[in-house]
Amino acid sequence: MQLHDLPPADHTPTPQELEQQKEARARIQLTNLARAEASWGPPDSAKGMSLALKETGRTKNAAGATEITYQITGQGFTPDMQLTMLRWPLNQSIARVMSGIVMDASGTAVCGVAAPGPSAPTDAANAAGTKTAQQEPPPSCTKTMKPGTPISLTTTAAKGEPIRVALVAADNKHGAAVTEIPFPIVASDRGCNISVVLGSKNAELVLVEGTGFKTDKTYTLGTESYGEKHPLKAAVNGKGQFIAALTPWAPNHDTGDTVVYYQSDSCSPTVSFHWGKDSYKPE
Image (cartoon, rainbow, N blue to C red; front, side, top):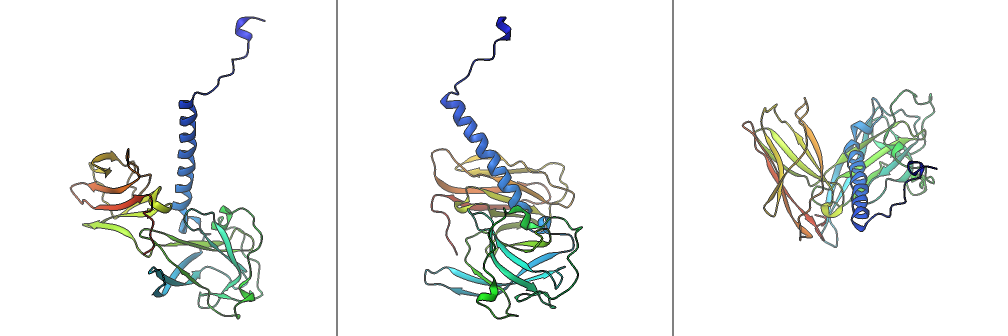
């Protein structure tokens, strides 16, 4: 055996290399999470199907937070579809929370038994339900509700927190997802809008979304925290939209405020948000 035939020597990673590997894995996980959150809604819905949350009331609970109640409406669902409701709260996995749901003739999600009819079509795109692993069937609404009762959802939310809901048919391929933000963090200037959506509690991850932007030949898009400015990598598409994931952080600080800004001759919207330890507070 020649020297060049010997297998490479085992290498024990240094503490610095282990930390770099850990950070790389964390970046990949955050990137995958941001992509999944950004696509929740029309991109995750089956062709021809959509969902909406209709606000029906707001009240203050004992803790002083606002409880918001929604009813669920949809389009493209057939009467024979047995539907399951999914929720995706911040810092949690997608969960199936209720089954036994059907869509009535007016397009309102109600508790009941699906009407007999042809099987659901099989050529639609995968719906939001395919993001979840197979789980035990959730409790049926028929155990606590009368048939025909509209399905309602009551929840609290912090500034910029998305309420993510989906209704998925039994085949796990047909359904629709929707995102509602009751307390948006948004700023506008001359038709350009920048919004910040929480990707996790305490804003360790946020999505920065832009709409209404022109095709500016030169512009500056960036963030600023504690006087430090950083470019925000995002490209405005042909529809005047952009979306970017951001993990706000500043050296020697575990909480703070970040400003997101866009500057050009056509518009210059600026929005700020609070992040870090104990920053998550329902409105």
